[in-house]
Image 1: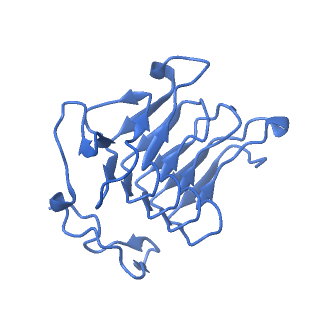
Image 2: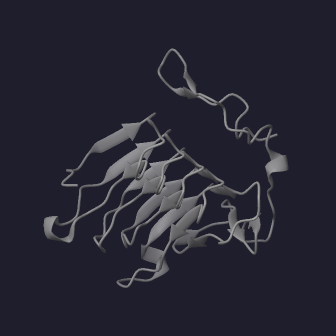
Length: 189
């Protein structure tokens, strides 16, 4: 809260927290935060959401790119009622307990002004209770859960069999530059 413009979170690993992994919540009385960019990060096994991108109806155009949400007890990636023009690109959500992706309709504008979604993948190793709910500029490069299957807008399906491994490593190492090393985890075949 009370975050100014220009903040970037890069290569972070947020896991096993008692609440959210990454929490960009806004308090209505404080006004909207500045835009935060999260990239190349992992949110895993948090007791709430993996990536919570706002709150209380405050429009902020946060960005999350090249990141993974896995095993969080609520949602993997969520707008948390942020009606801003979010940018959500090249992310993967795996086996989050409620929604892997949930981005609701804005009460202020149509989906064309709500956000950009590109190259996101939603996967479940077991059938979940909820399909993904994503409103915004969603192109054919996204695979979201619909009717229990991970499909793009054209109906093309992707499954866990399209990946070398969906088994979560016990730990993630870092390379000499400090980047998280995923190995075969979520590597496409």
